[in-house]
Image (tube, rainbow, N blue to C red; front, side, top):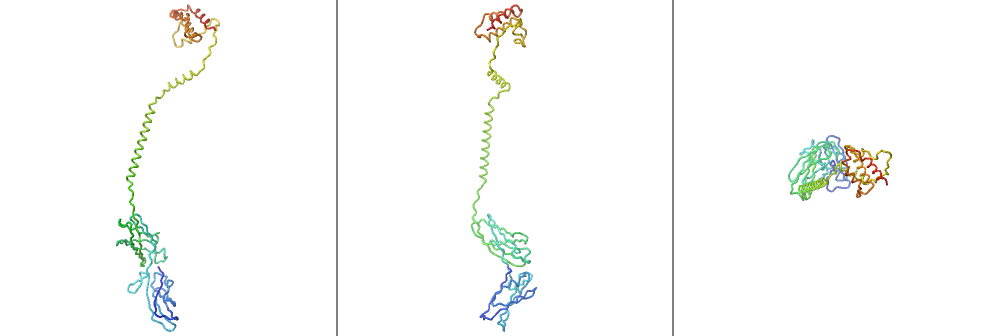
Length: 330
């Protein structure tokens, strides 16, 4: 993680004894630091992760010096040599987030460049995920938001914890980590096929019931007779006639020789009739208006008997007019 701390041992050190630490980069100037401790953080002297470093440690009490011991380390794959480098520095694997969805474990983490901001890490990050002796290779770049991986599980792992090993390599710098992930017991999913079929069947039945009800209602309403328009007008006219007040008949008098009734009233649309028929009809109308229908006078009977004769002549017209005038007077 680019934090470099150097440790060493020395038997029976005395108080005035000090240790000289010399850090000698391959590409830059060396630096020497004295300390009385048996460790030293040299991170500030080895900031360039792309460089190769030699470190020498010497013990001295002001006059005498011991033989130096050295170590060589690097982060760069270009300088690394297994024969010359006893140690190869590594990076901690980025913090891993895991989630389980059914039979799949989803893994995600940040690219190392986003964590350490070292130019040497500004490249592709390759990593291997191992589970149940199966290895899967993945890769991601620094411009991606997250590096991800998916591990498919067997049904037998439900309710158990599994171990994941993650190994990464970037710029020749290794990193690795382990994670234990517990897979919850999967509850059997409810088969929704039967539920959907039941809903569809019930909806169909309800639809048919509604359609049958509407059909019966329509049949019932269709049996009600519809009153024709002309009959509706006749009923309306009769209602108005029955509600009308009776018309008062004024007293009828004779002025001169002009008859009170004309042929237009009783003979509209019919052939001409004799004066006798006219007198009879006038007498009948007046009788219906003034006297009771059950009382029949002799003049009425004579009118009926002479109806046939009156059609051929006007012989009896003055007589019937005079009788009509007498009967119409109150």
